[in-house]
Amino acid sequence: MREIKGNIKGIRDSVIAELQKLYDMQSPQLVSQELAVKLADITEYINREISVYITRSGQIIEIAVGDNATVELPTFSGRRGAGRLSGIRCIHTHPGGNPYLSGVDISALKNNKYDAMVAIGVASPDFTKSELTFGLITGIDSNENYTAECYGPYSIEDAENINFVNTVSTIERILDKQTGTASLQVMSERAILIGMEWGRNDSLWTVDDSLEELKQLADTAGATVIKKFIQKRPKPDPAFFIGRGKVQELALYAQQENIDLCIFDDELSPAQQRNIESVMGIRILDRTALILDIFAQRARTNEGKLQVELAQLQYTLPRIMGKGLMLSRLGGGIGTRGPGETKLEVDRRRIRDRIAFIKDQIEKVKAVRSLHRSKRKKNNVFEVSLVGYTNAGKSTLLNTLTNSDIYAKDQLFATLDPTTRQLTLPNKQEIIITDTVGFIQRLPHQLIAAFRSTLEVVTEADLLVHVIDVSHELYKEQAAAVHEVLKEIGAETKPVITVYNKIDRLPPDSKLADRLALEEDTVCISAAKKLNLETLQQMIESHLKSKAVEVTLCIPYAETAKAAQLHETANVLEQEYTENGAVMKVILPVEDLEAYNEYILKSE
Image (cartoon, rainbow, N blue to C red; front, side):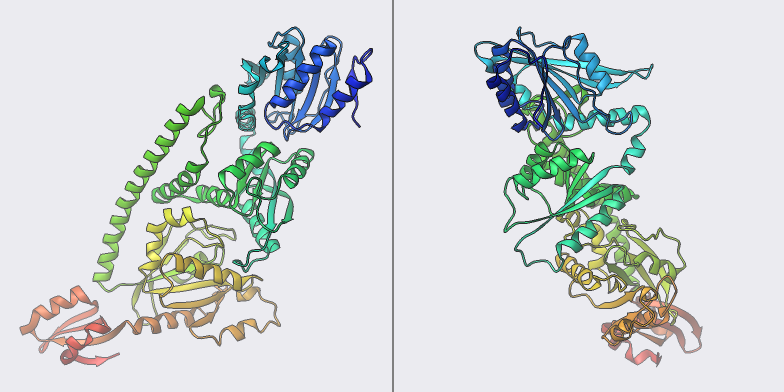
């Protein structure tokens, strides 16, 4: 219903019709030039104030005629608690050309918790020369009353360039902190998920399956998923990815359901993200940004934090762009601070400098790790890396094999920083086994690049143990995704033992584990229930025997240099001195065996 409220007595039907047409206009910005000029034009003609009320997504939901003394400003229900604004902004005109807000305007702003209160001073006859001032709630004072500030006057053109969406988000973060609801807000962010089905054949995953995994990621990040949407298109729209019409439809849904966050299952270009955000009026994330956020929550070690920050900066840098006139007093981080392009270039330079600094720090940590690895190689300590899809059970397996208590939980990316433990095999051989970060389909390239030094533990390992959650309905697709990442980091040629984990979760009548166990270099286990772990360790022993052999040598005292050399090139298990020489039980690399053939007492 296109009702025009207020004092419409004496106004022609043709003018009423022009006012009703305003309902068709969209203004995701603070106020669009088109809407501001139209309001000024009609105001000048009828010489009365006009007020329009706009949702955060840019939809006009109410129009009234008259001034604040004769028109009762409508009251809208607040969104959710003291830390949230109403999601509505009021834009009204002043026929006399005065662009400043009145005391009544400020009171209405505070009482209704409007996103903004805007006053347009009508300039005649050139309405494009009109100026405006706007007021924003900026916090809560000691008496628990809302405080407000006024900004302007600005030209209509400058006002259109204000990043209103980011400004409102910053205000709500400030209110969250002041009302003590900030921690709750993270847990209660209401999100919708967007996937698109189009003609690409590079993925084994269906859109539904991928969206279900995206939901798990959103849950892990602390969001509450309200609904999932799938859009079918022949190819992505270059400006809005899923198309302008679908974005406008989602904007309406987001406003009706009080949605805080929209997460796309594909990576968006900076322009697409900016365009969608301007129409929907809420924060927009893509799959990459969501995974980066989870990694930021999980990072514990200094190196892990550096690597996550590097990936985030590399993701953010191309997404920084000029926002025109910004509210620097409310600025909340990169991309939401400072006026104009000068500030933009400063931000870009700071990010580049920070990226260079982080890379230098990571290289120093890498050098220390390389030194430790070279010592292990020198001592012939064999390294085994656990790899696999996120939440496949790698950490639980490491805990069970080595009696450790590293963090292991049924959630995505429970492990971020690699953890190394010593494992003594049944034949008494000691090896190093490392738990690594879980992989995922379409793992962001920024993460692979940032974590390359950490992933070297995989590329340098003597053996990979690929852990697969066989109870997952998409275990084949998950395994394929792991192989893709291994290929990307150059570890596809490493010897691999395939471990199908969580067989205890399979149905009692399932024969799947029996069939899989027949595959070469494969074992079916339950890390949590400690099933078939002996078989796994025997398979590890068997693989290592192809690279080294355990022998007992007797080195004559006249050739002590040989004995000293063994301490450098072999893993000495036992040593005793007899009348014939030093008897040494060692694990010797296969390529070095021939050099010690004449000293072998027995081979094991």
